[in-house]
Amino acid sequence: MSAVRIRAASAADHAAALALNNAHTPHVNALTDAEFAWIAARCGHFTVAEDAEGLIGLVMCLPSGLDYWSENYAWFTARYPEFLYLDRVVVGPRARRTGIGRALYDQLHASAVGRWPRITLEVNLRPPNPVSIAFHEAMGYHGVGVREYEGGAKAVQMFARELP
Image 1 (cartoon, helix red, strand yellow):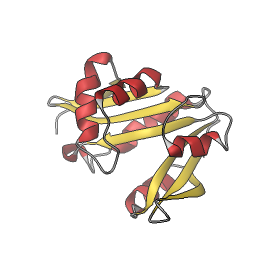
Image 2: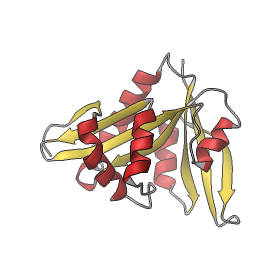
Image 3: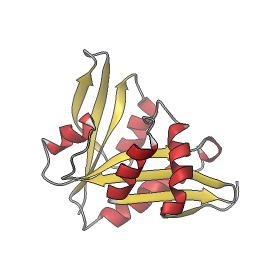
């Protein structure tokens, strides 16, 4: 893989970022152009990873205080007055197991310190995603609750990482 650069996203990245996002359902939910534009316009943190072939990763985070349609975001809103919600992270297939995900998170953590008291996110429990749970625990996130839905058929582990 060629050299990778992690940088702030720009409007010129939106089409490629949306395509990358939608290629990775069900790990992240698919978005329409309008939904993506709404999220991108409100991001408190939006970075991309790119190599010579194009975008290979992205992180999109929303600040607390928005009227966002996500039930997971609403769960955190009911419990924390301030947070940065990690709405979606995607690493493309050619970049997996190369450290890009960790680099995206390291950059997120560095930029969030002093701006938000915590970063929040969720990981699937049903269906299970033990690799993601282990990754987030290793990155300093701790479980703060479980949200079940679809009559208990699906569930997510809610995570938070407190920031200095």
